[in-house]
Length: 132
Image (cartoon, rainbow, N blue to C red; front, side, top):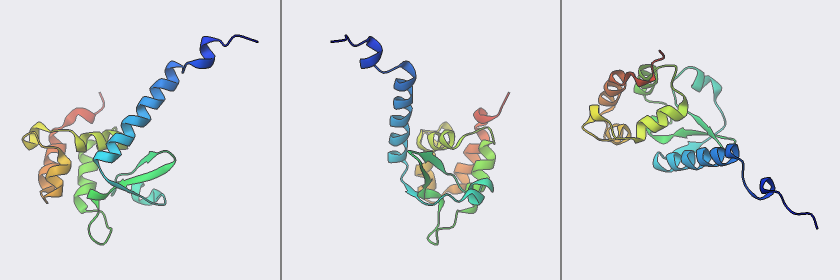
C-alpha cells in the first residue's frame, strides 16, 4: 500500500482561499437578497444594474428593481458614484456594511425605506474605490 502524501489529504492554500471567497460571497448574497436570471450583459454594461456572478449564475440584488422589474434610476447614479474600479462584489459589500455617512446604517437599509438619494450621496462621499 502506498502512503498518501500530505498533498493528497489537505487542501492547497489556493483551494482554501477560493473556498473562503465562495463562502463569503454566499453569505453576502444571503444578506442582500437577489434574483438569478439570464445574464443581461446590456443591462450590466450600461451600469443601470448591479450583477455578480456566483457559482456560475448571475445574481441581481432585488433592492435595485421597482415593481415593474426596472432598475431604479438611482442605481446607475450609485454605480457611477462608486466608480468603475469597484467590482460588483465591492458594491455588494459596500451595500451591506454599516456606513458612517448614513449614521451607521447599511446603505441597503436606507435604500429599502426609500431614501435612495441619501445612499447615492453616501456613495459620492466614499472615495475608497477611486484608483490611485
